[in-house]
Image (cartoon, rainbow, N blue to C red):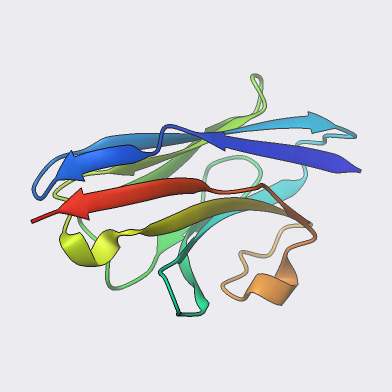
Length: 124
């Protein structure tokens, strides 16, 4: 079992930045891909970014490319989402997730473990 806990959300003005963190604990292993998903009110949970176990491969959604960066520190069992140039449409609850194996998943069902989420609100 793997536990995930997000932090770093908050209220920020458009154009601002936030850095989300995801701490992992439990039966952790470096052989997990980590992902971030965002869920806006009344909408489905959407893929934002994913990174493989070594940090050597990463991918981000088209909507955030050039603004958001995913990274991880496997030694510290942490994953991060750096969010720059935030827009009001980025407002959502952001969840981190872990998936065993080497594949970078973009669908929620590909991830076995989820955190509780952290709220990000971007004001215009």
